[in-house]
Length: 114
Length: 116
Image (cartoon, one colour):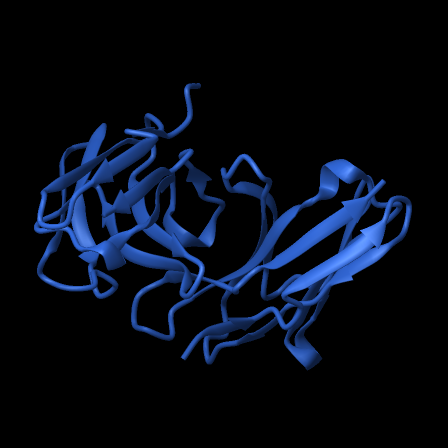
């Protein structure tokens, strides 16, 4: 099993640019989560999907952030336009039965917005 | 609202010492799940343990042990005879439905440094 795959591992961009983060969950996992990790706020849940449908997006900071899951094997998190305060590590995680069982995390995307 | 508190920001010990990482949680839910995750310097988050709210038995796995006490809303993690490879940030997390949906909330983490 390849685990949760995130790309890119690192992204450096300039303020105002569009950023797209990608995630491939583990096959057979019905839940997909996007988390953001910063020194100030720790690990925050941004959004999660069940069977490709967004269930809770209350953690999405603002309209500049959007997430999609067009099929069971792919999700994107987009920031447009990006701002320096978006700099963080973004993690994708998946599980079979949601947040009541262990999550399998990807390696994360380190985003730096200059 | 659900909340996880890890009061210890950073702990430094010398190899072979025992160390306990504290975790206190809050939830109105009656069915909830508690977790510990490890984040080594490489950055990935690794699952360590999951307990449900109906099972208060302590658990031991090698040098790791966990003490779950509902009376004090605590789920503490002890590493016995610590090793340098244990150096990492450790997160306690709670899965509950206080927000109306089941969500996993993480504590702020405890950075453990094990000196040789």
